[in-house]
Length: 420
Length: 150
Image (cartoon, rainbow over all chains, first blue to last red; front, side, top):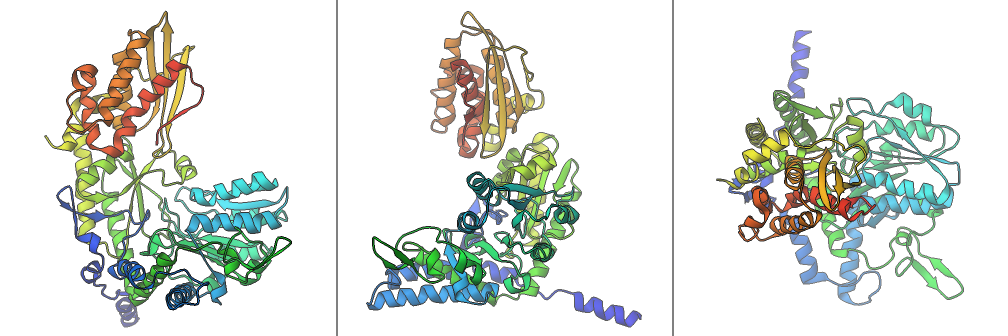
């Protein structure tokens, strides 16, 4: 028996992740801030970009810039091919069934607004109910509130417990015959909680209710398989997954997207326009009115290429190590309270002091070169739930190091020195 | 002195720890709410104005050390002053906070409040220091809408 358990312990040892090597791919990380080496712990707000992504944007504008889907000339064909190749990469990245299910949008916010306005206005009526959780980002609250105002539908909220976990029994209780849509986050941006989304999808589908997952904070940390999750919509942003700002993806199940009316009207989303009647284009173009963000879409495909080169079990083990080490270190600091203590967490460590406001923490850490977010993290209901006006949030990426955690701890000690 | 020491001077830390006039004024005849949506700082400023003179002034709310200290110092500075002096001081403090770092011209016109001048080296914190002042100005003008700085 002993030999067996030793063997399984050996298997559990994570593969070595060469963080020093990976950091060389991110030019911005080598700079100094206020004379100190930059420690970038604001990855939840936006991640840094590897050189290949930066170069992909540069290359597009130097060599391929042209409008897509409408030119017979050489450059237009190249740009179109590059853009559609990127769509294919994103399909593979989340294991969607077809490229038709990958709609390029500006980011997670636009993706959720698209579903709320297109699906929501077409299929929801007064008295219908939409369920979100108490730990949503404002971008997964406000679009549904707007839809409720427009349709007379009602927003229902799944409560979270003191660790920042969804109370599943309460979700089960909220589901009823009036429930017409469920929209929840996959990973909480303010707390780091990994939500048991498969279970949520299962319960909702048992009642025939479609589910949207906000994957903005999940894609940088977890490998996503939308078929395995069985969700109906999955929304995420390029800039939080080491790609450019201004581009993101809405995955939608093709049969639902087919039934939905267009979100915006304009060029590219039509097949025939007369003043009497307009015929809409096929998926995914029906939802992509106007000239899209071509350069950044292509570069997001390059970010996917980069991520696919990484050894993901090793990345996951390294990120888990960072989070556990940081959590253990911060737990030792008197007067510091960690907000968000779910069993399953990814990449986020939010904390508060009884006597020091998060803003003051943020300013002092910045002087030590440590970049964290201080504020409500666009999740004011979460702050209200925990009775704090704001938190300081350190959010990690795979290029962060254990040494940087030590710098964070020393910087927090300086906060306590200033404020006593 | 480092920029950080300049920002968190003893006087500021003291006002943060023991804010003066940190209370409501029952039946205040001027009152306004201020809010910074970016960071969640909230302040309510209460004033009792009689014959154009600020007889009493207080504040309540939650915020960082800079916003609390600024509000606290504001109340001690304005109590007993005529309304016109409050408007003038508002302009001068605003000028000091948003001015060029190191510019001395605001110093003598803001008196003790010059201690807040370190804030202008931290552009992200200027709104923290100015929130209470905008709220006070709004209360004096009798504006109903909550003040927002972002």
